[in-house]
Image 1 (cartoon, rainbow, N blue to C red):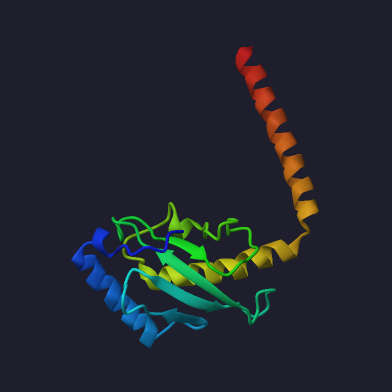
Image 2 (cartoon, rainbow, N blue to C red):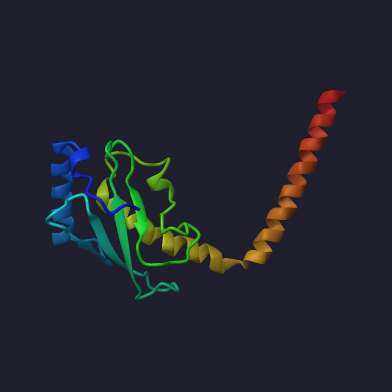
Length: 161
């Protein structure tokens, strides 16, 4: 996660769009998100996200940073939690691993959507994890994998006949 400016790598048209969206996000932030505007470098995109109620993250303050690539918005920005956080969708280096920032990215989603994605993920994934103990899920997954393996072996055997 480099902290160098990316201004020279992004087209002026894209920079104007980012500045406009960031200014709007500062004036009208999504609930629980405080956007931090850097007047010196528009590509230094940071925000503080308040942890969602009803989760272990409730009332916590989590700092997030976005890194725009030279082909933004055609390709997604990389998102990082600066605040150390343990979550299934956050890598050890803080990188946010959600489909919105990977294969499901669309250029029209914008920065607002990117800031909302981790907040939603924190809520959704924690609810999923709380429903069933991980050991039980693992045992169920293991049984399912065994069944699939047996079915594949039977199909191969039938094809040979």
